[in-house]
Image (tube, rainbow, N blue to C red; front, side, top):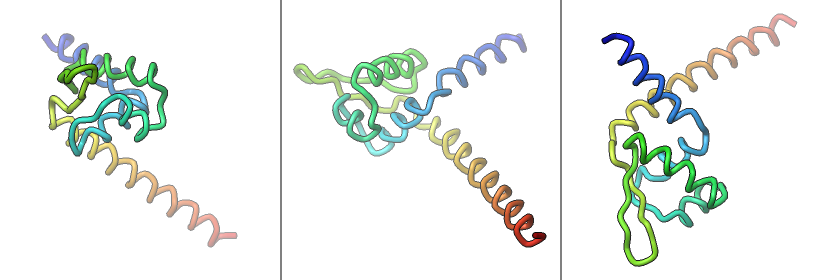
Length: 109
C-alpha cells in the first residue's frame, strides 16, 4: 500500500516537473485560456504547449471545453495552487538564505 502512494506521488511530481507546465498552470489561475493565449503568456511554442497541456490533462490538473474550433483550457483542481504557492515560499526562503550568506561573505572581506 505504501509503495502505491509513493508511485502516485512520484508521478504527480513528474507531471509538474517542467517550467512550462508550471507557467501554464500559473497562467490559468485567473481563468480559462486558449492555446494562443497561453503561448502569448508563457512564450512557449504552440506544439510544445499542446504537449504539456496533454500531460496536465492526463493528470487532471486541467480540463477544457470546445467552442467552435477553439479549445478553452482551465484548471480542474484548484488545490494544485496550494502546492505551487508553497513551492514559491520555499524558493523565496532559500533565496533569502543565499542573500544572507553572500552578504556575510562580503562583510568578512
